[in-house]
Length: 472
Image 1 (tube, rainbow, N blue to C red):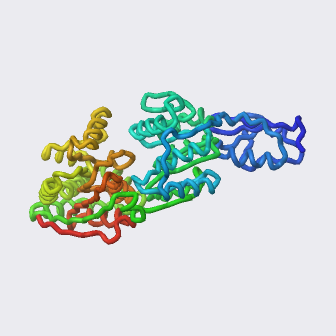
Image 2 (image 1 turned 90 degrees about the vertical axis):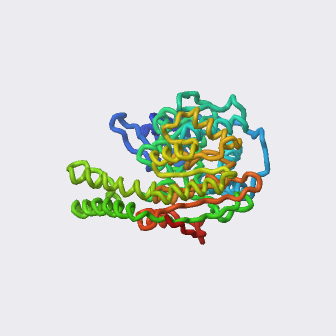
Image 3 (image 1 turned 120 degrees about the vertical axis):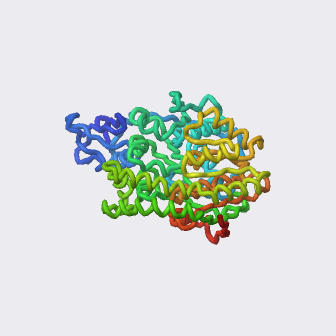
């Protein structure tokens, strides 16, 4: 039994925990996560993320702990707008609770991940921080939480806001900066689109917080660099997962995926092959294997060091531009826009130049990272209200933007990322009346787009695709 004199102080300090080794009872060792800090004499320091394990270890050893690290509140939370959750939402919450309120929930875009988080926040009843990848998503979360729990509880950190409240929403960029200061103030952290978290800086948003309860949300948590494996440590294991095919029809819109090939004209083919030859020749002479993890960064470095490298860089851009903007692809786009002139439609491309070219040619509003926030919000609202029939974008609508009206998506180009492709499909899958969704993937035959297309379709959402051909 611990004596009053055995009471030890556990404190939060700049994203870490501090423990005074000198007052530990005889025979009691500090939890192994603590290491001596030579700057503090006999005091021990541990990452804040170890709070739950460290506190449990001390209590099991019979140590009376004066816990000054914990600065989060207990809250009485009851959603103001209650509804019966869908079965997959209830199952996800149950799995997370069974995992001791730690873990990652994987659900497709449009399947209601945010409502799972609302239920988790209400069930946990602790000050909560929601971390989102963009300002737009941060705003959406603040609106959702205000609707559910009231404006007085909801604050924001980032995008010009510095208002920390019991339920606070922030971005990954702001979270890792401010967590060393605020990491003791939240008992629950919800990491939305948690595949962002393993980035070199963003991990601090998890490591510098004591939050014993953690929920990760994503439609596509796996990363090409393999760093999704650290989510087990930062948030918890994957506790629940359902795929697009499992939920389509009942909880997501029914959908079809059509892959369409177009062909270069003889003149385009000759120029494409000339550019690609120059690019490939430079790779060979520089002994660069572009498929290796460092291949692309090596190409960028080497191409900046000589005239030959500059020619190779321009050649790479040239063959890419031809594949992205070939005459047949632009002609097919015109046909699809006419064919679906009555359907809410999104056109996706890989680059802003193509976005603006399509916008000029077809008088379609464009959304890129250069689009002012107010203009973007107006476009999205007008699109969802049916006042705009179509939008063209590059990457900024890939995740987190609610566009329930969208029925048709046309992917003219993109990266080889499975995540990007699944997210683009997700933009058109939210249920909206009795709509049936359709995603076109337009690729240029005989170019690197074919290989890129094969890579990004490695997902069960794209099993047995319908395939079409268009000559140009």
